[in-house]
Structure formats: structure tokens, C-alpha cells
Image 1 (cartoon, rainbow over the protein chains, first blue to last red):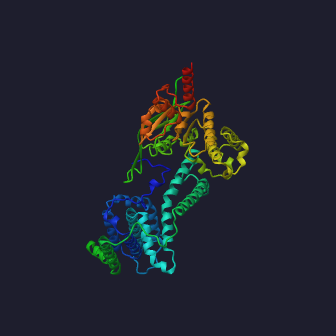
Image 2: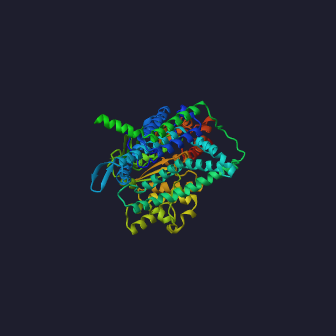
Image 3: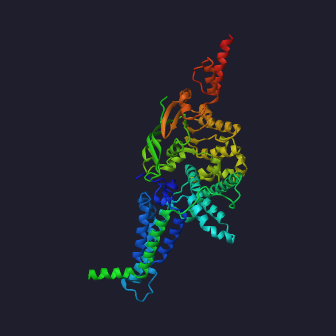
Length: 295
Length: 289
């Protein structure tokens, strides 16, 4: 594997990266992806069943497989946060749902109590996280920021009647997203220049305050540069006669196609399945089944 | 006199975002040597890998393949003391004036010396010396950084690098976007710095006039490969190669070329304005006699 570089900020971020392969998922309408993504996330948060999460995960995995992007990439970011996730899950297991009277104690040591309920909630937390991260990877791999902006704008359109600035909101979101790599590039450049003059961005050796103080020389020029970028962009937009949303026509016209209905169908089936599994307590049935077989 | 190599680069290769679908090959097996007491120019079109190459010289990017030896220390070795090497190689990137961050000019110059934990007097002395070298009065240390002109800011950034008293100076586009006066001042500073023995300089530039004026030897990079390396005069003599790589011909070179089209060949291989002028002068005197 290639040696890691201390100053390559962008090289570390894979999630949030658009990878154009022209697959069927890429060709889906941005609104379809937005709505399905939001729905799936909400469902993943509300279901309380391992089996349901498994079904959602398989659906997302299926989506990832047909994007023609290496599935491995989706899990690079996940691997990095996994240690934190384990700690979170451990806290959840040992601390939170101790109050249920019907819970069976599995393991006990001093004041640490592990019940079947708390084990379940820990596993659910991890499951939810995995589903949501891979879903976000799927979305970002297949949706460019332009598409995202058009999608958001379209979906906010109904609010325009209530004098909600839909177009402007979408524009602000888009610019914010576009500026992230620009500012990261600038930060990288400044860090390199300062490291050349003996600055030490090393981790761990200093306490938090000292590290923060060492970052200050980075923030000042970064802040000034970002204001300059903003000013330049505003001037460029004005000189090209940008007047805001009303009466603008679009280069990209969004319309639903056959593949969007198929995607909705798959999504709805997965969501309905997950909700049913959660509602009819499939987990417990399976668990009981496994226990009877074991005994 | 036996020349001693201070930087040796062997078969250096670099890929950005290696192992992802967005992988870009930036450097393809670069060989490069820098000796003491010389100025080396690096030219090449945008995207030819010049900046990536520079970042390898003081370990901002570690070699993926191949090796970089600086003062005999291999930078591929993760135990190499980078802070010591960065002190001995001063590096100035493009548009350094955008990266000034202190309120007062003197504090910005003192950033380097303070990072190396020098005493208060030593820092003061280093700042005074560095500002003198770039031709800024010491009293400028109390000026607001924001109030300086572009040329002054550029020289202030240069002073920030000089403050660490490096043996090798690496500059990326030192004269870009300066007015002629600012450019002349920066070139004077560089020539003055170089006069001390044991110092070497690497200059990356799109401005072929700068290269003609400064560089003893020049490397031409294209698409991550060294296309030419050798004496600067020879590169400038190869008109075809320069045009093929999208590089500009300097005014003296254009004059030499036009003259040769009109049957007057100078042919001594001078590239600087002064050299060409002297040759034309001697030809004119010759024909007058």
C-alpha cells in the first residue's frame, strides 16, 4: 500500500466523492435518489429489528453493486470510524436500557449488567450506522453536486408559494458543497508552506490547547482566502448577469423515467419489508427458533 | 573543483489517490541532481508535475517509488528527521503573500526561527538579517502586513524563508504576477543570496526570461518525465523542443531567430539579453570596419 502523506487531506476522503461510471443508478433522477435516501435513513433509524436492518443493508448493497463502482470504496470510510463505533456500542450496551424488567441478564460483573435487551440495542446502533454510511456512500458516488442542487431545488419548489427562497437555498447548499474541496486544497497548501518553515502539525505529542494554538496560523490565511473566493465568485456571477431564481431556465431538465419507478418499487418493497419485520418481531421468532434448535 | 551533490533523486514516481478509481499518475521515474553552488531551473507546462516534484524535496510528500536523498539522507526512510531537513532547505510556494498570517511583518518572518525554539535575541537577529537580505528596512518589522505592496509582501515571504538560514532554496514561481520592478528586485535578492559559497537554488518558473537570467542548468518536465536536462543555453537553442512543449521564447531568442532568418547568424549560444546584445554589437562593429 502507498505510504500515507501527512498533508494529503483530500486523499483521505472517499465518501462524498462523485465517481461517474454511467450506471443505471447514476442515471436515476436526483429527486428519486434524494427521496428514497431520506426515506431509507428514517426507516433505518426507527426500526428496532436486526433482521429489518439486514434487509435494508442488502438493498443498499444491491444498489452499490449495480453502480459499477468498487464496493470496497464504500467501506473505506466506515473502517476508519469503526473503533469509535465499537466504543459507542459498548456504552450503549452497558449503560442505557437497564430499566426493562422483562430483560434477561446475560452477564454481570460488579455494577456492569448486560441484558439481552441492551445487547440488542448495541447491535441495532451499529447496524443503523453501517446502513446509513453505506447509503450515503451510494448516494454520493452516483450523484453530482449539480444534480443534487437541481433535485433539492425541485423538491423545495412547493414551498416557493409560501415565499420560501427555494432557488437561493439550493444555490447556497451547492456553493457550500463546492467550496469544501477548494478550502481543503487551500488548507493543504498553507500547511505545506508552514511545515516547510518548521511548523509541527504532529498529533498527540502536545496537549489540546497547544495544538489549537499551532492551528491558528492556518486559520487566519484560510479565512481571508475564503472571503476572497466568495467575493470573486459573487463578482463573476454578477458579471454574467445572475439575478436570482425567478425566470431562470435550466440546462438540465429533470424528468422521471422507467428506471425511477423501478427504483421506487424496490425501495418501497424494502421499506415495507423492514417495517413488517420490525412490527411482527421477526427477530424474536428467529431467536426462539435458533434456541430451540440449539437445545 | 569537485562538485558535491546535495540532492539526488532517483526514479521518483508518484500517483495521486493511489488505489482508487481517481488515480492520477503525476511523476514517472524522475532522475535529478542538485550540486552545491549552482542554480537549477525547472520548466514545464502546467500539470507536468513540477509542484509535486518540489514537495518531494523536503519530505512534504514521501516517495512512493524511487528515492530522494537530501544531504545523503533518504527521505523514503520514515525515521528521517524531517524538521532538520526542512530547516536546511528553504521552500517558497506559489503566491506566498497569500499565506502571511501575522498582524505585524516582523512576526511573520519570525515564524520559522520561533518554531525552532531560538532565544529571543537570536530570533531578533535572524529577522534583522533576513529582512536586510531581501532589501526591506528592519523598521518594516512593525508595519502591518496588510499594508505592504504585493512586491513587498513577496519579499517579506522570502525573508521568512531566509530567516532559517537555509543552504538550499527552492522557489516555485518566485516572480509570477509581480510588476517589472518587483520582479527585478526579487531576482536581485536571489542573485545576492547565491553569492555566498555552499548555497544552491532551484527555481521553477513559467517565465523563461527568469530561467535564462538565473539558471546554470535546466530540467524540462513534461507529463511527469524529464524531457531535457543540461546546460540552460542548449535548451534555449532547441527552438523546436521549446515550442513543442508550449514554452515561450524569450525576446533575445526571438531576435536571434529573426536575425538568422535574415542571414545573420550569431551562433554563440548566448541566451541572456546582455550576451545577445554584445554579440549583435560585435557583429555590427565587424561589418562597420
